[in-house]
Image (cartoon, rainbow, N blue to C red; front, side):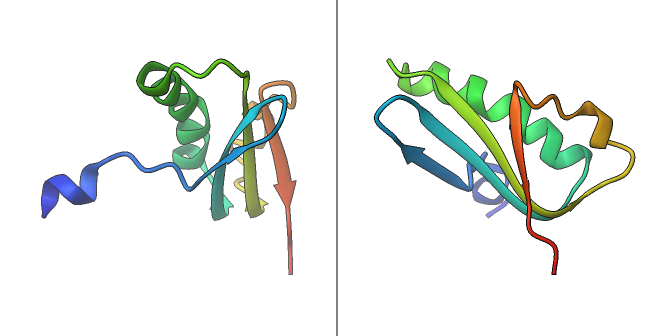
Length: 83
């Protein structure tokens, strides 16, 4: 059970005509979500060897104030949906 719970899981992988989107969904995006947004594209590319570019999208209610400056819009698109 511990092995299955510790496996890496991308929330959403979406295929478009010109890219593949790796989408992380969370309520409050903190350090964990930031790490997932940075690491998941690397793991996905190593495993599946995509021919299209990868695009990372973070969907959240809010960004953690301590990590907000770390999100570079050119690397990670952030979509916030507050109440």
